[in-house]
Image (cartoon, rainbow, N blue to C red; front, side, top):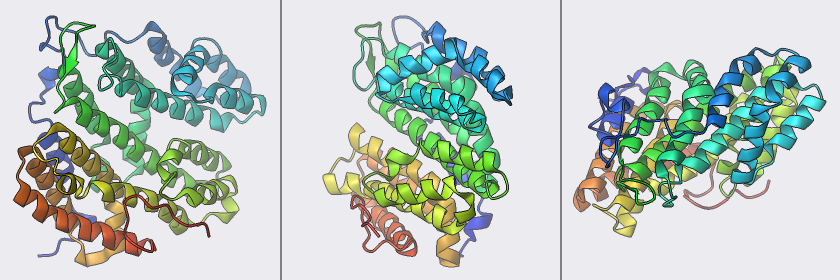
Length: 381
């Protein structure tokens, strides 16, 4: 029986979390007991990160230039400057310019994007064998458990409750289980390659989903509310590098539309962003099969990355592909594919990947992409 994807329950998303982290329980949030010492999740975050959370209520409550400047200057600005040095961005300069221009609506989303960039920079640290992987993971967790969890909760509200009610839970679980999978005492600490890299992918790509949902919702509100349009424009900056190399021309289209709400076209804005994420998801529909990376951590990490990207595009796939597309069955096939890749079941993985590719390509066709691809950029109009 064909299931109407728009009525599909959230259960497949929750099952995916259980599949990825089957040992997760509320008690696992307390500490990491795998190493020589137990470290509580978050305890090695910097004092400077804690100060960001301390300043955040004043920043979110600011409705005028004076209040916004007072909340930003000092500890919060210092943290953004330090983050710029780590990420190679120039967020402080942009925020300072917005304050100078009395663009108060832009300040909070600009800072949120800067903090997400810092999270992305920190959570890759354990994979890169930084001296203290606990500290890197905890710094990211500190930012998540303060300002960015609020953003994720807002995204759940803005998104489709049938598919997006798991945003906060997904990131929470990934942080908990990733921390538990760091073992040993720095500088000799090491990670479980089956857990930490997939958890990194779940955190990063789920934050893209949160930004995506807010951009679409605030862009729609921006037709009547210029402040909402500006928030959408700034939050889109957190997605811009996802469009680069997949729909590079779409960046200018989206930014122009958000900068001038009179030109807003809901379907076109949605499509421009979806093009890039459809291609990025396509890569992982069969990568482990094509490369032979079955039963190994690298292949599993890629499959998890694809499944997490899939969560971003599932609602739009359901809307664009119609009744023939059983979205619930499709995400279940993704979960089965994860299990097959992890177990090294070549026959099951190959069979499942065919269906994953088929429907992704059907979605790309619905988006107007000329030929189904994982890596080709869209041509200039």
